[in-house]
Amino acid sequence: MDCVVTGGAGFIGSNLVDALLARGDRVTVIDNLSSGRRENLQDALARGAELHELDVRDFQALARAIDRAAPEVVFHLAAQIDVRHSLLAPAADAAVNVLGTINVLEASRRAGARRVVNTSTGGGLYGEAQLLPTPEDHPIVPLAPYGQSKLAAEGYCELFCRLHDLSTVSLRYGNVYGPRQDVHGEAGVVAIFCGCLADGRRPTVFGDGRQTRDWVEVSDVVRANLLAAESGITGPVNIGHGRETSVLELIAALNDVAGGECSLEPVFAAQRPGEVRRSCLDVGRARRELGWEPTVSLRDGLRTILAGLAA
Image (cartoon, rainbow, N blue to C red; front, side, top):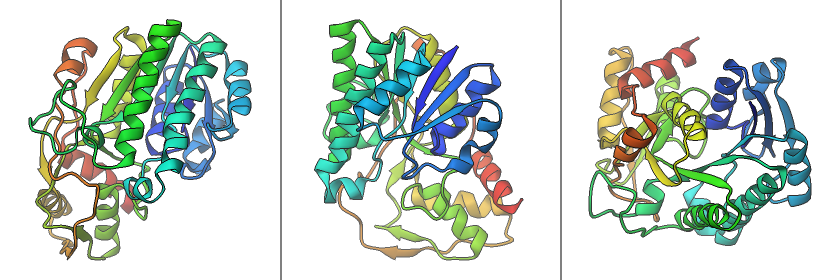
């Protein structure tokens, strides 16, 4: 199958590219490398993947690349994902997440793609949810422009489905972690804490550490994308672990996995604006309609990351 992966040089995207190649698909990657890394694609490029270094906001360049690839499925992962940046520059956030998604949808339609699998967010959309775990039909009350832009992108996916009969689905991720996430980056608590553990640094916890997240390992997310590509379901689908884990519990799990050789002792700082207190996704729809459920436990996922850092 011919596929396009936007944001394919990023953490999640590059893991998806590897899985597509492993099953024999032909893969075209679109990434402006602003946060994605060429080295994430080193093996993929050697195995025949093609990289177009361009920005999804550039419709003409994007349309040429997608038309040339003639994909059956487009996996759209290119995005602005920093909640704090969205608060500082909401128009820039929307330019990538809304206008960029519209460009991907229109280019995919023109190229005759069968299906677009869009990447969205769970916690970023539901805000301070009144029901945990939170189902897809819960009221949408984002606390930051990032969540609002992702909601608009989902709306355009559903519009293209109604207006142009382009099959689309939006996967609302929990907090994804795993190999290739930047341990020195600004996002990705698990990766940052693992980097602190490996380097002997104290991690910073914003707030009291009792805020919860729904951490899901990247291989489970990749599998959800593959199943979504073959499914005909539309609209939003939660992809998480379905379990609340506090930041303090995450630190305890890391210390347990490390086996006492080293220990994380956090430094506490003021809570940051735009971040939800509790987040946990109801993954019932994914289980029923995709045949998907998470398989990697948090501790097993942490062991994989720490083993990679030690290698």
